[in-house]
Each structure stands twice: as structure tokens, then as C-alpha cells.
Image 1 (cartoon, rainbow, N blue to C red):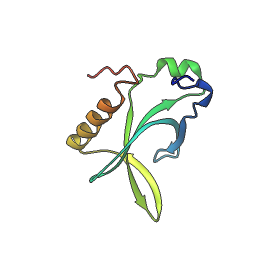
Image 2: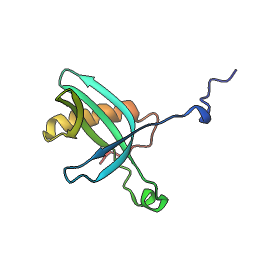
Image 3: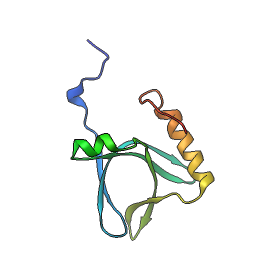
Length: 103
């Protein structure tokens, strides 16, 4: 029996988010972190057009979850210190699985 994951078993967690103007974007959820300050997701943009995927910078999109009227929503982290702390935590967790170029 092999310990290697079977590629056929890979089922990415895909979500679609809309911006304030209603434009939708699709992301793969790579990781989630829960802390005393909230729940955060590390997202990788997904494209139906392979050309757009090649043109993408490959940068993670990191969002924070909130609850409004019983519904979960995601928003940008505006506090630079909070963003850096969360981004560093995701890099530490994901660097063994992905090639990460820290800038």
C-alpha cells in the first residue's frame, strides 16, 4: 500500500466571491487558520482561461471571515500588522507544499 496521495482523490475546495460591484472571482481554498482574532483563508485565484492563469502573479489572496445576518462573508484585511502576521503564518504552513517566493 502506498502512502502517496492519489491524484484522482484530489477535490479542491473552490469558492466564488463577489466584489462590491458584483463581479465574481473563483478561488481555491488552500488553507484556513482560526485564531483569537478571527478566521482567515488563503486563496489561490482560479481561471477558466489557461492564458489568464499563466498571466496571474501566483500571489495568495488572504481574506478574513466575518458574520453578518447569520451569513459568512469574507473581506480584505486592512490592518497591515494583522495582515503580515496572518500571511507569515500561512507561509509557514504552506511552504512545504508550494514554492513560495517571499517578497
